[in-house]
Amino acid sequence: MFLSAQTPYAATLPAKEKPSEEEVTLALTRRGTPTWTEADFQRLLQTLGGAGYGWLRPEGVRRALVKMAL
Image (cartoon, rainbow, N blue to C red):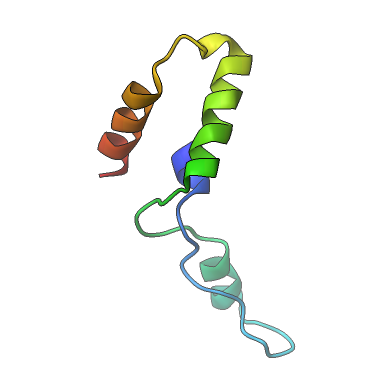
């Protein structure tokens, strides 16, 4: 879920008044390589800790994320 949320959208909605169905679909579709900041990563670790996975090592989580993102 974290990687999905960090994947950019395929397009942005145009500034015109009513976008087409295809434009809306693209604006809601995520494509590309996930990217995250250190703050995003720290929030993930906090969420994992709250869910009972606080024993996971940050470097192991980071390695797994990078591997899955590829």
